Length: 262
Image (cartoon, rainbow, N blue to C red; front, top):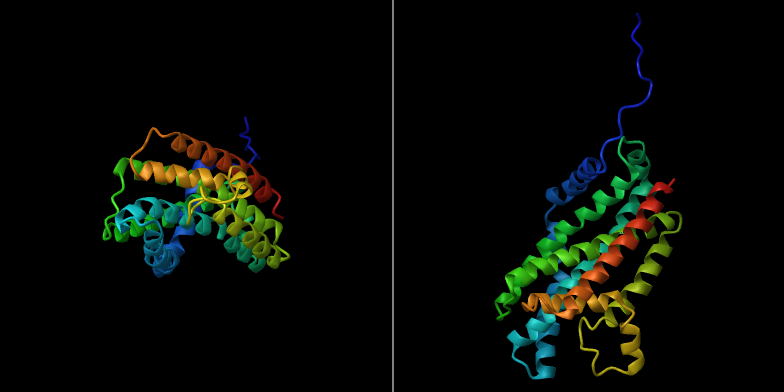
């Protein structure tokens, strides 16, 4: 009696295990160079220090009350700019050949995207906590349960937006100018039409109409409701729904792009 050897490769590693391996790999550079996190929070701090008091002066509200409205929007801004730029890292890896070497690793291609996208949530949470801590010096008082829920909703939204950024990086691999052109052309209209910096109630009707189709509008309103402790507000579940839809669409587009990246 002879023993036969199964010629098939070993069972395909689970997506969760592969994603964890990619997540750890992506986090190592951040842990080795934590100053990148410090510098990435400078821009939102400038908005907090310069735009927050200006908003308080315009509305006549005390700075603490102005920050109750303004700070949640700044945290959404961190998620927007942080996750929208992640595709540039993948673009660099594609152009340097590092991404091609990752594709021959024994991990699922979808895990290459999921692990990277989840990694972007770590700096987001750290930066948000720094902003909240500094704003607290001026009287900002968030609801703790609301803040936790708000960060969870924002993480789901960032997962989808980061995946779309990775897909854009893959599509732009031979024309990196296209990545930056598309990214910058979309980011600022989305930000200005979300009411993140100024309320849109006094804006023209066409602007309010466009804002209704902007998923970021619902994210900003949801974060304001949650951070102020209004957990049952309509804006809260609308923002959660917008985050879920963005995540599903982003992951679907991103995984398809990753599977056809070569």
